[in-house]
Amino acid sequence: MLTQIKGGLIVSCQALEHEPLHSSFIMGRMARAAAAGGAAGIRANTAADIQEIAQNTTLPIIGIVKRDYPDSPIYITPTLHEIEELNTSPCAMIALDATDRPRPQHQPLADFVKQARAAAPGKLLMADIATLDEAINAEKLGFDCVSTTMIGYTAQSEGHTLSEDDFAPLKAILAALHIPVIAEGRVDTPEKARRCLDLGVHAVVVGGAITRPQQITKTFTDAIRA
Image (cartoon, rainbow, N blue to C red; front, side, top):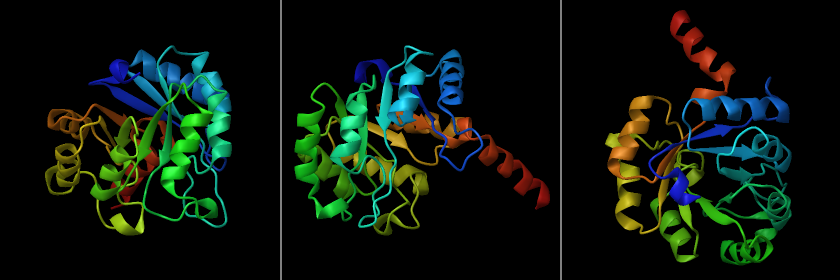
């Protein structure tokens, strides 16, 4: 899969239960539209959506399951249960939160990675990180790649963005790692996506700027009201 997505755009096709487009059928058609537009891969939430997407496109899929647990702030593929769900799906890669935050049942990340490898031996593993230290740790733990998904969404990275100071956080991660780095998180313009690739990322993930019409609409209405 890493060869297939190199230098390309991965489109995140997700809609949560409270969102207007929440439907595996709709996500399948969204992925088909992304493929027609030239996407190199898809990132999708839940085994059901992944199954539908795989029936609508041959693009490689990064799978996640978003689920809340009362004892942890982590919600992206947080436990072995979600790994096992994704292992039954046709995704080629599983992404999981690899931030330095308490995991469900206080499980160490290193132990969880070992469990994930054993439970889904045919899947690549992506580490969703928020800081440089987390990225370095993910490489040490044997992840196949890291993604900057969580920058700005954790206490450790609060107030930061992927693109601040001409993508300084991304540059630091690229300089420190030997495994592929995927740029993700508020890459909301074609110019930002191009800049990430020029800096040397393996691929770029774009979600809301393409697949969340309510979010896209709000950028227009906010500008008009201003």
